Image (cartoon, rainbow, N blue to C red):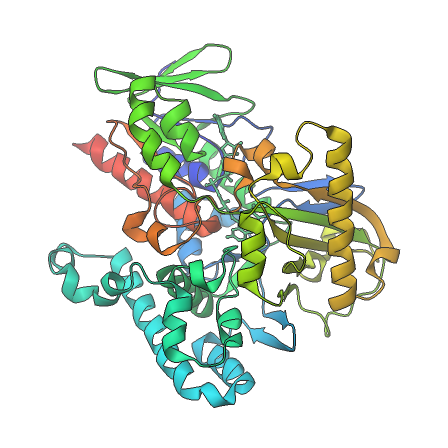
Length: 497
Ligand SMILES: Cc1cc2nc3c(=O)[nH]c(=O)nc-3n(C[C@H](O)[C@H](O)[C@H](O)COP(=O)(O)OP(=O)(O)OC[C@H]3O[C@@H](n4cnc5c(N)ncnc54)[C@H](O)[C@@H]3O)c2cc1C
């Protein structure tokens, strides 16, 4: 069989690249080792409940937003309806912050200023910097050739802060250490001292200007819509089909060997999978050796532990938001335990209640409550390795710990009302997606792994491109989808020449 492009991996990166290329009239096959497309972004059913396996929101879905435009370009937009997430709550050890996510920068600023009135000047300075960086990022994404030539003039802040952490910059603006915890509460699994300022500025600017949403029917609706658009454009999806080798001959890609030994020919391959697989395991040894140093030098994101609860109880939408973050006392201490491979004594936790947004996800009178916390890399030892009975005990203990935390800090009596309970460990995440050690976000968004510090979408092997959350521009649903768009644009240009 012969194709113009083979896309390996049916997550957000692979699906986006495949759908865009198919719409440009190319002959594309998408290989997905699992039972369905979506990778991390998927939903599953249990006893009448529809649970989201991982993610809880997506940015830029409102008309004209970044993800909206991307879905429009892929042809997936007509199959999706998004529900806006209006509020979120962050609970810190001695205070809490209620956020109006559609209020923009000014509303966020006034909420944090109210909490720390003695730090007004610091907030003004810090947010002005975030806005300037956000503006440069927007310009960077639509860069013209003359802006590229005069890069240092147009992108002063991007250059200056490329290697800065949020923690170090905040030290310049604030005296109250608690502010660090508040302003660095982001989906990154990193404390302020390790978190990139550029990543933070981009995320905060985008969330506050474009909002965050939830797809009707659950997160799995997003890949379903992308797959549908891809197939309608003439693309072919092969499920339960793992790529086992990327064939390189005469200095360029020639195709892919799939499990069972079948050869599929193509001069272009997009690997939207774990970067170690893409650049080391699947490539011929002489190429794999060349990339091994890069792959080993990367810092992978921490993994996650999730608890999925179906509950029969009344929950008050007026008192509880869809999204609640419970902060640990000290995020640096929490992170210290995690990177040592231990579960922290005082973990942070995200609770979401998707039935507040879409009641059809649970039977009448029931809700879904989902709990999530960061979990360490060293899961093979920590989670019992191949000893299945020990693994099950540790998993149950961890789930009970998170439920207790949820009861103490957010919903008293929660455990009594559970009718369904499941949990996912880093092993589960790695098994379903082959992500490096179940990495939640691919690469950790540390200062060295943002922008130019991230592996490029075009590799040194002619015809081999990367997409997904291990490559540019960033992690998350939108980041991985954008990487697919970057790869598709590069391939279209190369094929036109
Ligand atoms: C717990 C958790 C919560 C998250 N929450 C959010 C959130 O709220 N909002 C947000 O924006 N992002 C969130 N993210 C991050 C986001 O889901 C990911 O960054 C993004 O979906 C990654 O997409 P991807 O295409 O890079 O990779 P993946 O989703 O990992 O997809 C890779 C695909 O490739 C397949 N594959 C692997 N190897 C092979 C092979 N050899 N052959 C064929 N197929 C193969 C896998 O089966 C998988 O389907 C969360 C992630 C996790 C884990």
